[in-house]
Image (cartoon, rainbow over the protein chains, first blue to last red):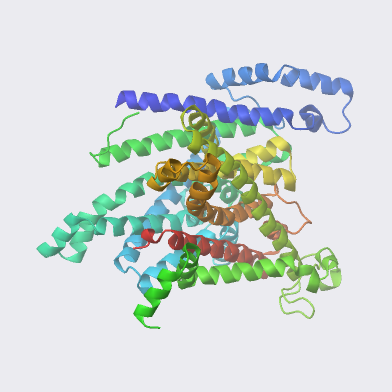
Length: 307
Length: 293
């Protein structure tokens, strides 16, 4: 077990190196001098040269990359080129908001998606089945920012049920979490439905049925236990999607999270911040996937963890 | 038609005919296909019935007029620009950009996935590890990072979305080629002395195309959504160029008092994405009837 975890964590290293190097590379070959972008059009040549020296832009690409990665290994993600803040510290102060949002929205997807999936599977090809699938699909097809804006206007501003923006207590996160969960809803419903239908065909379920078990007992005791296994795996992938969607949601609801840090950084090409988000999120997603796989093995003894 | 007749007519159909027949039986998929086709035709033939100058023509006299105003079926925005014209010309950008991204990602994905699946071994290992790297970061974040690196602009956004989309295709293509490579009919073709290129293009590709088409259709919906999201965040297609997400973004401050400004572009995004998803699902069921049971 320990060996497996270690091996999986070690496998993260090439992935992180690969993705950071790729972003670093294209950032370096892209046209435009970062020093000029920071200082503006009116900067003198001397000022630009000084800035380039300060940012280490005159070093060869590989040297800069190795310096950057050496910093990362020491927990130093550098300073924002524009605002001057320490990227690592800014992240850590913003992380709780993004994690709260992500967990809450994952919880909502699971709490709504799984029961709906069960409902659809039990009424396969009936009106309930189709209605559930179409509604779930409708929610998934809506752009999150649109749903968020509409919810904000009608539920927060007009009806005053929820706070419209910001990140205070948990109450602030309800509407953003609902917004963020819409995207994954259809996937969750369909996965649960398919998975239940597949298990439903197995012999032991037929045995349970012929024993005279009630339909509820069959679903709750026999089918669900096995049918939910693939659903657990999907949660990991879903978490990654949620982090991507969090950018938009955090922007709509003005939540100071990690993802929204990215938007401004992208607009002004703030390399340390963009790199920091990428490093951070790729490690984060990798660890979440590892945890999900461990859960999977814990729930299903047939699954052997072999790296 | 009696059951027997139908069975007979089914058995006479070609493979493609069978797929079309199964697809046409799927009401949701057909609805999706029709809506998407109509949307595309309207957007492409837009210059025939809506003057392009209306997209940018500002008029303070008619600003923020609701839907149904004379001459402005969907109303006007804060600068008095006709919303219908902006939506339709915006649709050209949203849909065409979506198609362009999926097309480019498909080309890269098919080449890489094809090589990985066909050659196997080291080539496969290298290509798949590269794909793993790109799949480690959520698509939206990766595209944003690439936009950050290349600078803003429509073309750079297309490149960014392609970078984020191709590994999915590469994986799909590789998986389907891997399963086909060892099929008996491929072996049989080899025994007959068929050339490699003929095996690939005549036997493997047509059979492996199914999952790729399905995932391309589904990806198209996701890509349109991603383009709109980037437009909304102000790092995709930039205003005043009309694009559905950008239109929503530029009207953001007025949506509270003029809800149609938010509703209309959102509706078009949601409808096209949903219809593409229906078509994708329908294609999946039609191409592989075993999945639907």
